[in-house]
Each structure stands twice: as C-alpha cells, then as structure tokens.
Amino acid sequence: MTAYDCQLIGWGALLVESAELLAARGHRVTGVVTRYPPALDWAREHGVPAAARLGDLPGRPDYLFSITNDVLLRAEDLARPRRMAINLHSSLLPRYAGVHQTTWALLHGATEHGVTWHEMVAEIDAGRVLKQSRFPVGPGDTTLALDVRCHEHGLRSLKELLDDLEADALVPVAQNPGERTYFPARRLFPDGGLVTGRQTAAELDRWRRAGEFGRFDNRFGRPRIVAGGEAFLVTGLRPRPGPVEAEPGTVLTGPQVRVGTVDGSVELTALSTVDGEPVSPDAVLAAGDRLGAPEFTGWFGKWAHREGFWLERLAACAAAPDPLVRPLWTPSPVTRGTTLVPRALVDRLRDPAAELLTAWLVCLGSRYGTVRYSDDDRRASVAGLEALVARDVPLPVELPPELGFAGATAAVSRELAGLRGSYLRDLPARYPLHGLANRPMPVALAVTETGARLDPAPGTAAVLAIDTATPAFHCAATGHLGPPRETVREFAGLAKSVLTLIEAVVERPAVPLAAVR
Image 1 (cartoon, helix red, strand yellow):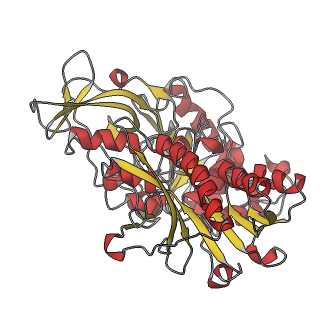
Image 2 (tube, rainbow, N blue to C red):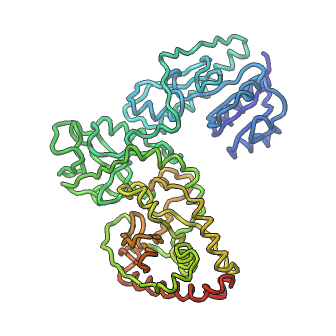
Image 3 (cartoon, rainbow, N blue to C red):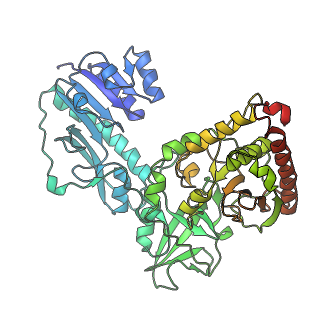
C-alpha cells in the first residue's frame, strides 16, 4: 500500500473522524486548516500543524481533503496538492450543487439522497465524481436527519475511496452538466417561509421538515406565521388534505388548531416564539383568525444576508436584569405620556438628536439591559414587516463614567454609523448555539424628525420617541414591564433627569459623566 501525505480543511466531527481514519490506515496527516475546536485539539495531540489558511501549512500534500468546508478555495489552493484536491459534498452530484443540499432535496420532495466525493476544480462542485453513496429519503425525514445520514455515508464512502486510492484503482467519472442543479448561498427559504395557507398541505409539511436543523445553526430559515401582529415559528405540523373548508389561511374550528390550505388544511401541533420558547398553538390562534400575509417574499434575503454581523452584535447585548411581568409576545394595551422639551435648550445643542439620545442612554444606564434604537429611515425600511424584521435594533454602546459628555456623544455617533439595516427577529431561535434566547431588551429609543408617535414594536415593551420637531419626549408603554401607567410615570421622571443632564453639560461637555449623573 502506498502511504500518502494528506492535508485537510473544514469543520465538524466528520473532519476529525476523517483525519483519524487517514492516520489509522497509515497515511501521514501533515496539516489541518480549521476553526473547529475538537479538530484543533486532535491536531495538537497528534503533533499535526494547524493553521487558519492553507498557505500557512508546511509543504505540499499528495491529497487535500475538503470536508464540511465553507471556505471557497482559490486557484493556488487547488493547485497545492501534488495529486488531487478532493471534496465531500452532501448530495448526489450533479444534482444539488451549492449549499443547503439536504434542505433543498426535502423541499423538492426527493425520495433519494446521498453524498459525493469529487475532484475539486475552479467551478463549484463541478469536478469529476470519485465515489458516491446513496440512501432513501423517508416521509418523516428532516434536514437534521438527512445531515446525520450524510455524515454516516460520508465516512463509509471515504473508506471505499481510500481503498481505490491505495490500490491505484480510482476511476473518476465526469459529471453531466445537463443534469446539474445549483443552489447559491443567497437562495434561501421559498417565500421567506411565510405560511399563508396559499400553499398545499404537502408543501407545508416539506417546509416544516426542511426547516428542522435540531440544535444546529440554521441560516436557511424556518416556516413561520404572523398572528395578532406577532411572528411565531412553526415547529410541529401535520398535513390534513381533504375538502377545502374556508379561505386559505383561515384558522378552522375543531379540537386541534388547523389552518386552511388550497387543498385542505394543516394541523399546527407546535409553535415557538422568535426566541425559541415553546408556545401552544391554541394560545396564539382561535377559530376564524386569519394568518397575516405581509409582502415578505422579496425581503427575506435582504434581511438575512448580514446575520453574521447581527449575531456578533446581539452576543454583546445584555438582557433586562428584572424579569418581565408577562411574555413580550402576548398582546397588551398601550399607555402614553409626553414631556415637552424647551426649544431654547434644544437650540443650544450642536447635534440635538445625538445629544438627546446620549443623555437618555446615560440616564437609563443598565436598568433595562441593552437599549434598542430606531430612526425615521430605519422604521420606513421595515414598515409593514415589524413582526418579522426588527424595527428597533440593539445599541450596545459602553459609556464609562470617566468619559465626558462630548466623548460619550461621539461614541454613540460612531456606533450609529456602524449600523446597517436590520435582522430577522427569529435569529435567536435559528442560531441556538449562540445562546441568544431569553435575552429580552424591552426598551427602545426612537429618534424622529417628523413628530411621529410610535407604539412599541413587537419584541419591545416601551418606546421613548425623541421628537426633535416639537420638541418633546413621547413615551408609549405596554403592560409587559408592569402597570403601564407606572412605566409611563417612571419615564416621565427619567425625562426630567435627561433635561437636567443636558442643562448641566451643554456648557461643560468635557465634564466626566460620573460628575453629572
């Protein structure tokens, strides 16, 4: 048997298992490129060089193995191995080239799936097929189930591939380009996963199974409904094809919560909040309700493409220290209050919106956790989609007490300049490994130049509008923090503190915050 020098790039348990298999069969693992901690541990324990880039590894391998790898390799990377660069792909190429292969297979109703070891070339997933392994797709299979099976078949077929490599019996087979289907990363859940009843019962069943990733991160999306101005994820569903009883999207009468479709109905057996907390369907929906149908299709990809940025930002946020009186998804009436701001005071400010916002952040401190923020342009960009897209985004800015007010305002302005767009509100539920659930940030500060009165957006309990046109502070609060009249009175007291702070620093902007708080 010929022993080869091998290097690996990728992520996950299969990367480690593949490295172990290569070493056990007498091949030399001369380097690993990964960010996966267990793979880094394996490399350290076995004295194998590990790096963040292929170019940082020593020497050229005979074979490069790409396994669960989301890094696009350059031409010089593909030319690095003396013999071949080999990738494991979770589909039966040439079908389902690209990403989210198992999810797309379920959405299309595939009855068979599998994995492919193939030669890597410049075109993504287009190289010659070296080895494939097939398995049937069952009627209850989910994305998670297919991913687990791909893992098993990937390792099993690697053993067969190594048999061929070691015996110099490899027979590469060119792919048929006429059979190729390709799914890029920007292509995500059809119709944004929004359940409206305009789909068939079987289609919604495929949606539910395709969106089930278990405890793994899910960038692709999940089916969701909008009810009572709030969004919920569909985590359990049974198709009930049969006679059409009502308009699609209507909640039907009966012992179970069912929603009418174009060819019958589906039973909703389980829902969750956008934070991933289970919710009983009958706590959300009643017979005769209609599912909301905002124009979400064209927006889903727009809001999904910067999730990495928002995951980092949300990870830096702090939850409200005191528990909420009631869950934020439950409906509640709104109570309002207004505090007028002296025009003469506003006229003395260089940047009224930024300075008033900073003063509110200073006075609020950490009592409500990280404060959310919106302005007129941001609210206009998500108008009509507030149940699905965050209207008010977190503003995790640190304002140390030794900082002067001018420095604090500059820090807030820098933070605002880095904000781009918004994010899908179900992001915490779809990325469970990031620990973002159960992190309520119930208070929002909203800057407006139009004098707009705002209601708290879904996911918030109070909004304080900084109205630079009137000028005034307008508070609107629900009962989620406590009796809403008391919340409004508390914010009226905070408004007086804000005005006192502004009076104190308007002529002395360099005075440390600790001296004027």
